[in-house]
Image 1 (spheres, rainbow, N blue to C red):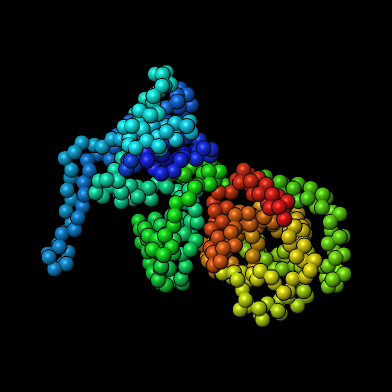
Image 2: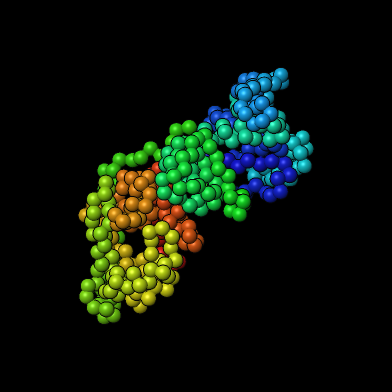
Length: 438
């Protein structure tokens, strides 16, 4: 469920559409709690506002600090328990964007509550109590403690934090992090934008490496459709897989339908290639499929016959990072090749690969063995499923300089982890939209 947190005087209006619920909190208040029973309570009572009292379940609070001898030599660790009673905070839940906007426009928590509750009858207000881990940003140590708890519980930070991907289980990296050889992680670990990691380093969690100052990210609006798809953001891992037999039957039916529907295009594409550059009209490149088996990935030929030889000469002009090769105005491209690529006609023969069982309609981009050696975790994940004619990377990539390879890894791993019928349908729809736009 997509939920937006709203605070008084936050300086921006809450999203008018996208969130299913708005969580209204006082300034500085932070809490981790189970939302499902509270959401069921709202669905049953249908109040305009549900006021929830969140009581801290963590028990007595304490702080730890290191004691040294004055010369920097460690002596002991001291733990100090606070005398204050267990903490609590107030939260308000609503599905009304207008009430959320009133809360955001108020100057403080008290005036915010008066603003949203004014004019509402008692029948439209409801009260609930729940256990939570409660934190206060104004209290020393609480902000760090909140992030510690969040790191233990949050299983899908990429659902709301743009540009991060799961490098390996429990290890989340921003796509701008430059991975060097020999780096090892012990989860949980979060690495921020542009953070430097030395070659051969061992990063032991729980650990968070902050953004590099020059790469610090600005908050952006979440992609609410992604948040909605991630139904288990906390606790168990997102994605439960699906039977491959059902997916295979869909692949066969879909590829047959596409091949029949596009049959008139084939002779036209073959003719224009033949007239411009002769035979052959097809190009087959060796790629890897499920469990590393090689297969000939079919395409209409869009480049000159000597394209592979010219590639070495053009290597210095490569605009892509990682193992890819990309030049905006590639001189090897045939005139008809530009047209074939623009409308993605060159990839239609790959539906024959789908019929043969080499590929799936949706999956990671098929790659040769050489490209699959760059990142072991990425290789093992992407070779655990069939590659696809289209995929999450193809519809989400930005082509930003020096980020394409990181995006490729990120979206491949995300697809393998989150794969579902719903996600496949969304990717197919987005692919069709891109083809129509040209």
